[in-house]
Length: 110
DNA sequence: ATCCTGACTTGAC
DNA sequence: GGTCAAGCCAGGA
Image 1 (spheres, chains in turn green, red, blue):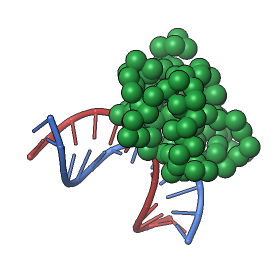
Image 2 (cartoon, rainbow, N blue to C red):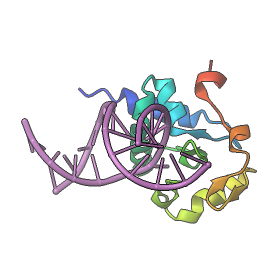
Image 3 (tube, protein in one colour):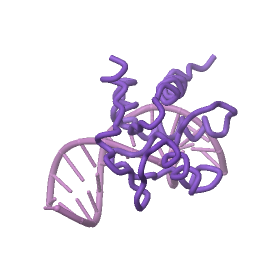
Image 4 (tube, rainbow, N blue to C red):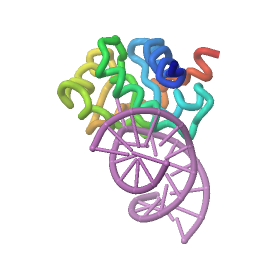
């Protein structure tokens, strides 16, 4: 029996991200108690995309607000499109007012 | 079992 | 203030 705690946690947190808000891999990692494992968050998200789960991975960017994982979507433009549809302005693959739209689970879910 | 890679982050030069 | 390198954990070859 394997314990996908990390992955399941990532799924839960990402699913809890409100519409029009975004967060970073590191924030999720910190919330999970492993800030140094931010990479695993992206890894888990990648697995989530492969699954039939409804994971708004487009609301998750790196700490810089860059759509680093847009290429892992069906189409690279899909991510930006989804973000803009939710009212998030994206410029040059970067989210505007990122810190303003930033959603920290450690704080919001406190 | 070993080595490499990866949607990141932080620290050092 | 920008660039380079290392750390982190898990999974695939």
